[in-house]
Figure 1 (tube, rainbow, N blue to C red):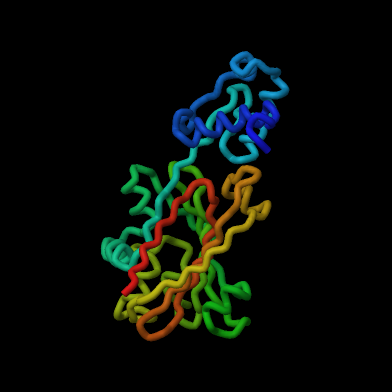
Figure 2 (cartoon, rainbow, N blue to C red; figure 1 turned 120 degrees about the horizontal axis):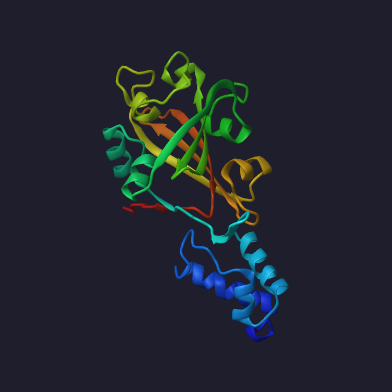
Length: 256
């Protein structure tokens, strides 16, 4: 459909969307009232309301009762994934998520939701390489930036390796599980030499949308990250669910 044939509410929505994406309407900025927008575009409040509803469905605007309509705050975090980057973060004892967020002037927080013994989902069990009914330790966490939920991350660990270690305890592990894996006196004692990441884009479940405050129409990225050691063991699978409106991932792949 040619632009001149678009209905008025679509033209208004397209113009406001462009202003938001260009940063001319900034994150958290309050929009003009419906009456002001009606006068600006020479149309009706009903038409303006339809345009705003379209942008809310796109996850670009939010309404606050009694206050008005605002550009939805989006604290994007760029996650840099390289072997050298992992090793540098690992040596400092600071998680990659926290280090990357802090480097961008943001306030990261990780919360442990639960630690339990159980069975892994079939796709995770396949990556762990053991039988489907092998018991694992499941560490469920939520990641926040500036108090906004950013990720849900479930970590799966073979209980045959990690039962009785810090992994089975409901508390933070300094330096992360990778420090424990690579500790010469730890339960594994081998270096992590490879991560394999599988990326799936889908719509969130109702529970995921509620926990991550995902607006209608915004998809979710599910990343399954499998850690391999120098001994050929699979020691960890991380199942991360990430709203697609607040992350930028950059993968650096060295090709010999």
